[in-house]
Length: 108
Image 1: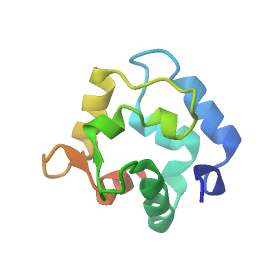
Image 2 (image 1 turned 45 degrees about the vertical axis):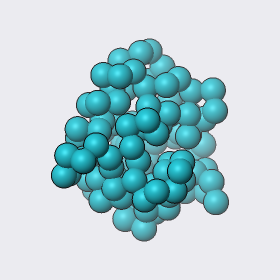
Image 3 (image 1 turned 45 degrees about the horizontal axis):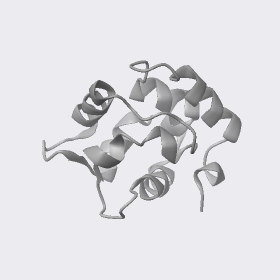
C-alpha cells in the first residue's frame, strides 16, 4: 500500500506546494489540503503505518522531520521549529513521540 492509495496525488502535490518555503509548514493546513483531515480513523491508521518508517508504532522526532518526504521523495525536510511544533501538537503524553491517536486529532 502507498499513500496515494488513500490520498489523491493532486491533493498531496497541492499540500506540498503550500509548504515549500522553510518554516511555512502547518500540520493543520497540510492535513486539510492533502485530504487527510477528511479520512476515517482506519485510513489515518493506514497512513500512520506508512509514515512510521521504523515500524515502532510511533513517529519519533527524527522520523517527523522527514514527514514531507514520506509523501514525495524530493520534498524538503521540516525545520527544527516546524518539527517541534508538530510534535508538541500531537504528542499527548509528552514522551517525545506521536502515536496513531495523535494523528487522528487532526481529522474531522
